[in-house]
Each structure stands twice: as C-alpha cells, then as structure tokens.
Image (cartoon, rainbow, N blue to C red; front, side):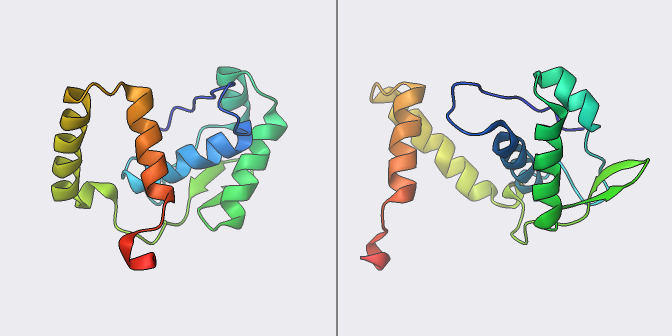
Length: 129
C-alpha cells in the first residue's frame, strides 16, 4: 500500500502532492488496478492534513479515471496512465544511474542535480527548436 508524504515547504498544494504520489506509484508499478488506496481518515491522520484535502485528491484522481470509490469499502485503483511502467525502461534507468554518478563526480549535490534535471526537462529539445 502507498505511504503518502507531504512536504510543507514544496510550494505545491497538499492535495496535488497526494495526486502526484499516486501517479508516480502507478508509473513505477507500485500501484496497479484493483489496489486499494489508504482510507481518507488514515491519510489525514498520518500526514496531518484535513480529511477534505485527501478527499479533494481522491476526487481529482477519480476525475482522471485513475481511481473509483466504492462506498463503505474504499477507493480502488481503476485505471492506468496509459504509458509503460518505468520498470519496463531498465536500459534508460541504467543510463540515468551512470549520468547521476557523473554529475556527483562533477561536484553537483542532490539539489543542483534536481535543478539541472528540471531545467533540462522543461527546455525545448533539439527537435522542438
């Protein structure tokens, strides 16, 4: 079962953090169709947020077709993101591990690596220019 975390200083709304974590778990193959998400009250208590915030996240996921609530039973994963799970991209993962090692060897800390990665992901590729 997924373990949610909330980063108060991230600048991202707590409900969106929950939505992103479910999407990430689906991408990584940690969640699959039929899996039950934690109960709203359990998530709210564990990460110290309002239960309505958890409900908002679950509703967003429902609107995206990723989960389905079953009254009195729970909320279940009912869809996928349509893309292959990250686990199916092992060659890319190995290449990324090598790249991370090179970045660390160049003296970059984790924060700098993440910033460089985000900047690169958001910038247009050669084909888009």
